[in-house]
Each structure stands twice: as C-alpha cells, then as structure tokens.
Length: 102
Image 1 (spheres, rainbow, N blue to C red):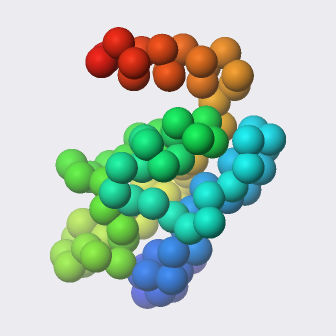
Image 2: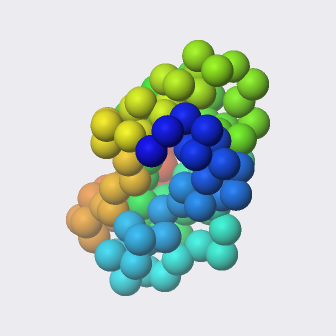
C-alpha cells in the first residue's frame, strides 16, 4: 500500500474495525468513530486500537503533515498499529477499570 492510497482509504473511512468487531459477536459500528472511540467502539464492541503512534487519535484524513501521515502509514502497514478484539474476560475487566476511573 503506498502513502497516497493510504491517505485515500483513510479519508473514505475504510480503515475501521468492522472485521475485528465481527470476531467478537457483539455487532459492528455503522461507521468509524474517532471522537470518543472508547465510548463508541470499545464499550459497545469490545475492540481496542493497539499502539497508535501519534499523540492524538484522529482520522488519518485530517492529518496535514506528510511526515506524521508517513509515521502512521508505516505503523499501520507493518501491523504495529492494529485493531484488536478483546476476549470476553478482557472486555469485562476493561469495563470495570473504566467504571473505576482507571
């Protein structure tokens, strides 16, 4: 995948956790949620995003820096950054920790 293709895909919101959400059996989101991802995706579907390389979680299409976009592209393309389905036990522990404010 080249950088321009990555930018195009990310702009169209095709980089989303649908496949991973289907693994959980908890359903899939109607669209990718960057704002309040925890609330919209992790709480409902038990999916987390591992090893996001940037300081802020934003839509790749909103990134204006080629260097920053390249960092994200490389992390995603090398499968360092990826969506991961929590097991039922992990999801329950995550929800409990969230409720405790951790």
